[in-house]
Length: 558
Image 1: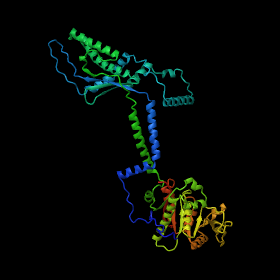
Image 2: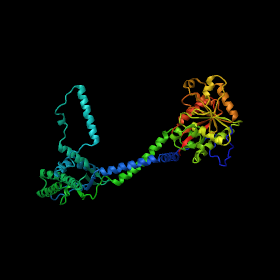
Image 3: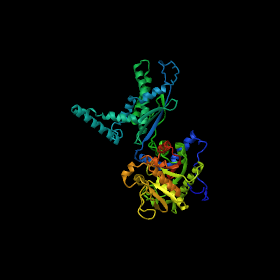
Image 4: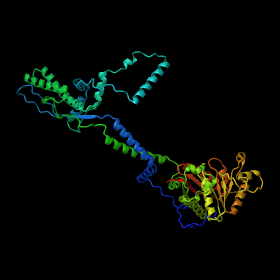
């Protein structure tokens, strides 16, 4: 098959189908991983941008719909426990603070007893924020599911609903408000120091400071009240000591009720308040800028990760380098999509053959020319003489094998070559002389006679349909019949011969026809054909002893 002299058009070869003597080096490691992730991100950049925009929109909606939360904190410094002398002349021994005392005092601050004192002193039982809240969509859904399951269980077991069941499930309003209050309260140790931070969060900007200061005062009250009780029960303490402790108890108690700090020092509390809770100047949550930044980073990284993960498991043909690595086939050419996939699929035989001659089909025509040159180089490398019979096929229909066959034939025809095409996807309406079309290849084989095949004329290309218009003949014909080889040989004597194979994955007719060809070219549609399908097609042809020189990526968009 003389497809034209290499380089006759003056343009250098862009694709060389000769097999490499050294296999390509497959790079691994972090650099290859980053390259794969970057390529996946660029391939799905449109979807990635939409995903990031959706994440930012969701974050903005969350920030706008979430009510602001204000937080205030009071800090307490623990001090060594004061030892009171039992007599006037007795000197108290110096004391030290245990390293584990801070953790113990944290549990005291978090105890239900202290929180109840603050809760009752500030009269928070009827605070609207701590009352029952309307259930959210998820809670409503789960409650309905539970109710439906209870009804189903009652019906299945025959048990009647107890009238007091709902009443027994009701929660005490004070208990419910106290639990909501405790969830908003927090106490922690600042680093490894003896400083304790007492904080409270609320949607009311004035309430957090009152609660934090009241909790700090309650902690002092609890400590000094214990000493006052011990002083009253011990005869060894003087009345002055009792009066001093009683004054400190009164000051701490008043501070708890007012939600403020004591008006006078409380030295016997073994703790000292070093920072009063102040009314917050702004909400502590939600942090809009932080949430938006997190949403943007999460959307970008999550989208890139998903794109890379999809690319790892995506077995569809996309790049020539991956084609060589996954199948071992050389990429003969990458044919761009000229008029859209659906438009090409609906085009007639004549229209499909004329795509290569359109004025705006420069890249498409160049790719078809590259395909012809690649076939010529591969045939020359086999040291064979004469013109080869080239079969072009795909595993499934719709990959564009017929389109490429007809345009390659039209390109050769414009170079002055006589081209005969055996097409599996052609229904010509006129014969070679303009009269009615003759029998197809199937009709000639099924006739059992030496009827001469009548080729149709499609813009200068001799075209013979492979299948018959009668479906019953197509079911029983055997394309390995010598008459099929005779017709192909006669066409070969007149010039170039191209065979448009039926889909390899649908019937064995394609393999039978391919046995009459010298070389076979497989067609893969970018983003549609998988490497597994190419490997299946390659395996079927190689088991039949057919030479496959490479593959073509059709409808390339990258």
